[in-house]
Image (cartoon, rainbow, N blue to C red; front, top):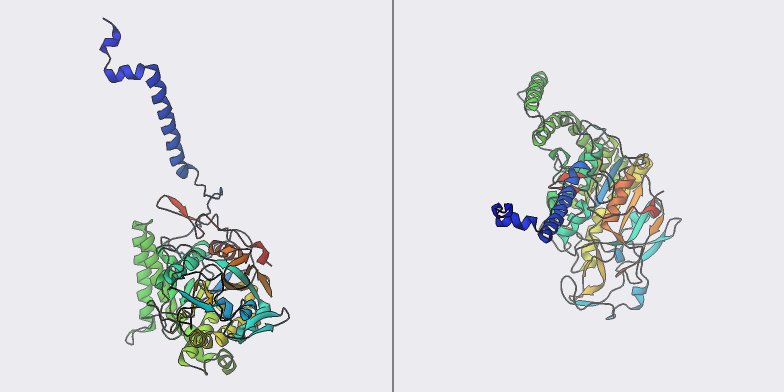
Length: 497
C-alpha cells in the first residue's frame, strides 16, 4: 500500500509544494506580526524613537519632588487661562491693514464661519499704541498688561484643530479635543512632584463665576494616577471641611491623625499596587496638613494695603475685586512652592456669549471691555509683583486662550466669530526671551502667515521649559504610550532665552 494513501486530504495538501510554500509564507508573516505586536513589552519605544521616561513615583508619597529630565530655569509654572477666545486683533496682534478696508466685504471672507454667514471687515475696536523699549503695539483694551510688553514673549502664529469651545479648551489644556486625557498640570506634577508638601502640587483657581466650559477636565488627571489631578479652590471658596470641630482639642485631633496613619499604612501593605487607594490616602493626609497651611494661605487680610491697591481688590466691580484676590492667592501659592498654579479668567459651562467669559459673538465692544476690566489690572499686578519678588527667575508664566476671533464681524454686525487659524498667546518669566514676538498672522489677522505653530508645539515648548522631554514623558495606557503631545509637537527653539 502506498504510504500517501494513509494521509488525510489536508495532510496531502501540506505536502504539495505549492501549498507548502504558500503556508510557509503565511506562517512567517504571522510570526513577524507577532514579533511586532510583542515589541511594545520588550522595547517600549515611543513614536519618536526614544525610550519613555516614567517617573519613579512612590504611591505612599506621590508628591515627593523628582528630578527633571534635564536642567531648566523654570521650576514652577503659572498658567493664566482665558476661556471663550480672546480676540487677538483687538489685543496683541496689531493689523493696521484692517483700518484700510474697514466696513468692506473683503474677498478673503468665507461664505460661512462657525456661527453662520459673516458680515464686513471691522478694524480693532480699541486703539493700538507702542509699549516699552520694544515698541510693541498693543491695544488700549488691556493697557496695564500692554505696559509689561517688554517682559512678554508673544507667539502670534498659533493654530488649533477645532472651532468649538469645549474641544478647544480640552485641546489647549490636555493635548486632545476629547475628554478623558490628563491635563498639562497633571503631567507636570506626575513627572516632577512638588517641593511643597503641605499644599497640593497642582492648584486650579477657578474664576469667581465658576468653572470653565470643559469644567474639571481642564485640570483633571485623566488616566494618570488620581493623586495628580488639580485641587480647585479660589479666594472666595476655600477648600471645604478643613476646620477642626469645636469640640475636638488639638491634642485629640493629632492622636486621631496618628491612628489613621497607622491604619492606612497597614491597609497599603495589603494592597501595594492600588493607585486609587494610594491617591485617596495621600489626599486625606494632604487634607490633614492643609488644616494648618491653608487658613494662613487664604488669609489675604495680612497683605499690605499697597498690594491690595496694586491688584485692585478695593476698586471696580465685585467680579474684578474677587478675581484680584485670586491673583494674590496665585502669587502666594507660587511663593510657597506649589508646582503648578492654573488661574482662570472666565467661566460658564453653558456659554454666556461674552457675559461670563470672552466669547463675544455680539456687542464685542461692550463684552470684551467688561472682561478686560476684570482681567487687566489684577493680572498685570500679579506678573509685576512676581517679577519684583524674584519669582520669575524660576517660574514660567503662560497666558493662553483656546483660539482667536475673526477680523470681520458676524452677520449681526456687532460680534466676532471663532478663528482657529490664527491666534495669540504669550509666555513670560524663566527660560524665555523678553520683549520678543514669534510668528505672524497675515496682514488681516485671518490666517497664520509665518512660522505656523500648533498647540502641540506650544505644549512641547512649555514642557521643555520645565526641563521635560515631551517625547519621552509618557504613560502606558490601553496598549499605547500616551503623552501630552500625542505623536506630534516640536519645541519652538527661537523663543528660548
